[in-house]
Length: 208
Image 1: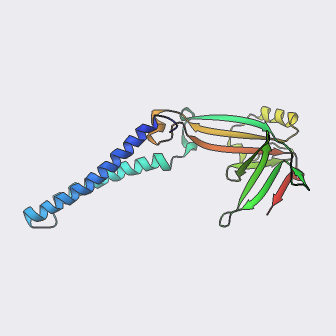
Image 2: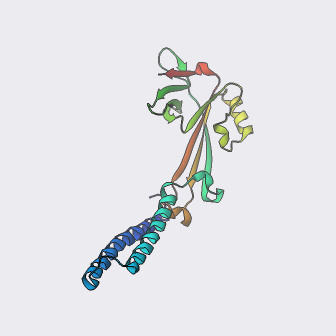
């Protein structure tokens, strides 16, 4: 668990599930009582109570599901997340015949995805095109990477210092707060994106 604030979300989920179990039990008990005491299977009063209980459960369940599973980090305010930027120089790698900064492998059947492999500080990193992009040539950003708040002066400095061969990683993490704890997100990573910068296409090795 990344933060004790997530206990708030766990407690709320427990309450919702316990209420759901109680709701089913209460509906069953009232129906049996209706059959035994009034010799009938239906009453508008019983239907009204059951409908109200069900509406309360659905509202609570949908609200919890939305903040837990379908929360869009891009719609949160900056006060809810921490964003950090890290930059490292790329290291030349080789397959024996070709030296390169990044290896690109095509993958995915139903949805074409590219997998990128690059070397930094003696360690290989693997990312895919859903969470990374490769930029080459004159410009050090592209349309996909421009969604993030890069410091252009810093990127230009990196181009000069590392000869246009570096990787920048932006990481967004949920802050450890009560509101983030409701969705079980407090302290957890929300998003990670890598900007892989190479001089030109000759420093990229492509595999099908």
